[in-house]
Length: 624
Image (tube, rainbow, N blue to C red; front, side):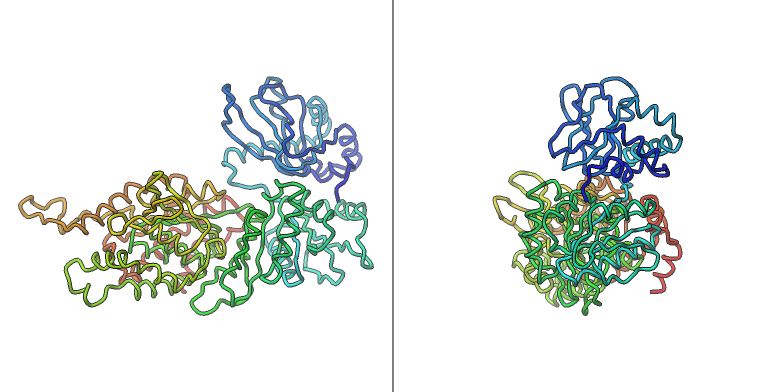
């Protein structure tokens, strides 16, 4: 499908929308066709720029360079964008370096020619103005509102995953998009309102010219969705990967190894393609986690786990909701949820998670510190939040002995830490799973006392990731692993919204259970007379210090958050896991109360995906 026909290439670029073929051909005849490989520099910083580049396929990096040669800002331009129009208009040297990131196809026009054409053709001028305005808005929004991809490809390792892409195409159509499907299934069953074209005829692929002709007949259809068998010839697969803006490689537990071999060969041709390749696992309901597949780790930028089967007992619907997470990716939405530390008060996170899911807000990534890591990883594993509440109450309510001694809740926690009882408690639910196997990408935050740095875990043993993040100093000794001495992440970053922002989330929701602090310690309040003040025990002091530190560290990682939910659980002791159900209810109410404002925020990112009435959603969830 790769072509050197400048007319056809220009037809694929949004600058030609609404133009008749005669004008498109005139403009294309005045263009230079550039085929660029990764690493090529199109423009050096501080040189004047005389050209406008129209990106048809590929990805280009724009770097703003200061006078010392340091990079101040990086921005990426993808298919359907332009480079150079504003800089060329100034006529001055520009501190912008333009570098090709992956194999790219561009059309180059001298700026004076662009200027003449925009004066001559009103629609061309309007198109170019819109493209420039979109680039400016993207910069002002901090790249939060992503450009919808024009060409998406699905590769299927077997027929088992074909239904997934059909459902996704239907979902895009529901959201107001107008997809055109190019597929290789002669028995394709039509989807209402969706145009399609089969590239197989009598067992052979039609010519590229025929495919381009069909695409040309559908100028208003967006996106173009290529739905193909993964065993197609490797050159054709590589051509499709080159022109696609997003690639979804669909596998099952039975065939993922074949995919690894094919993807390795495709990426050998262009390693930069990894940035647009996503693995999609279609899993049976009986399998809560994807297989460990280290061979795929370096071959895809993200992976998604999806099931069409109803979840088993005590499992939530996170695997079924994986479908909507793929829709998010296709729509340029990535919602991150940061869960803060706070010991037992972190049980409120479970209510927040439950309320968001039932309200149709499906998070794409989670980062948690301490209790936030524990609740977040269990949720990401597919465990139902209500079941988690019951399990925490059963596993962490002190026994009769501890309930009958002063400050028994504190001593019970000390006992749990010192006897190493958290590992077997958590392993009952998480087994030997690894973070990268779980349905939702999740990161835990811990601190290395050797380097003094925060450590972000996005892969590895799920239980170890929790144990490192909840490992309270003094109550427990540091966990020594891989040259690190690891303790509770809350001493550096208690609400890790910044981690999610750095991972590409364009909406970050933070949940803090320590934003509010009860003005009381060891039965002493602000107005207690000195002579009547009571002395605190060592354990009370340690735990109070932990809470005070968490309150003051909230502002460190939470700053990039777009929205903060603060369940008021200050009246609960940080050891009161026996009251997990009450705290979960408070968390759910806090999330539901915040829902109207949260949906307003989300609608600014994608008003089709989140256009439902927030108040109606709130009412529906109260009924549940």
